[in-house]
Length: 101
Image (cartoon, rainbow, N blue to C red; front, side, top):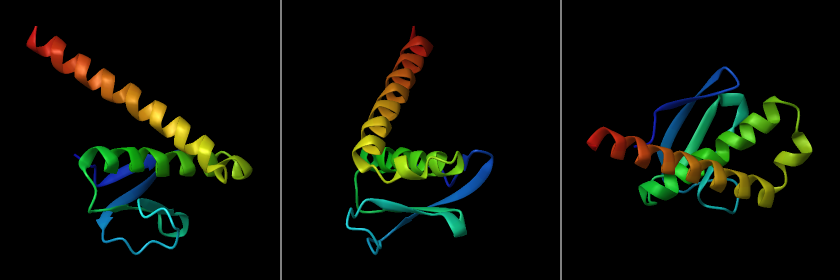
């Protein structure tokens, strides 16, 4: 389930699922800093939406902390977002299993 809002360094960003009309060529999502919005392509599977949300959140966290050069490095952002997302997915599965046991 994709949340409707997510905080980036204390700033609430709206999360919108929408048709692919992004200004970038990735076609997954984008962050619009001035509007405090993260837009996610609605036509993707939920797992890709979550990965994209983490990716865009990471862009925002880097910008909010002054890492403007690093946020332009898509390979870095994608790699870190995948690792962060996978870690939380594993933790969620473990928590569900613990609840069953």
